[in-house]
Image (tube, rainbow, N blue to C red):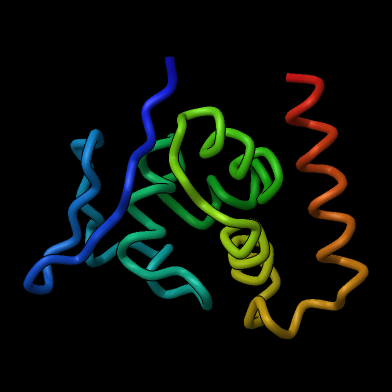
Length: 112
């Protein structure tokens, strides 16, 4: 049985139920476009604690890990991570890149 994890912000303190993770406010991940405290908490929950980790693993594999963990995120998280790696706001990603990311994420999920 999978449990769903939700991220919320209460009085300026990020909390993710089911995860004992709080973002390190000095994290280089927080310096990237598209990633805020809640996103960084989710990344840390799946073993990504730095830009280098995200780059090495890749946005698609990290997205797959997040989904496999039962954390409720949309495709925007996938776009946000790719945009962070490319230093581009996720809304400005080329539609072809977005389509490729979704295809790869779905293939990876089906094969996993």
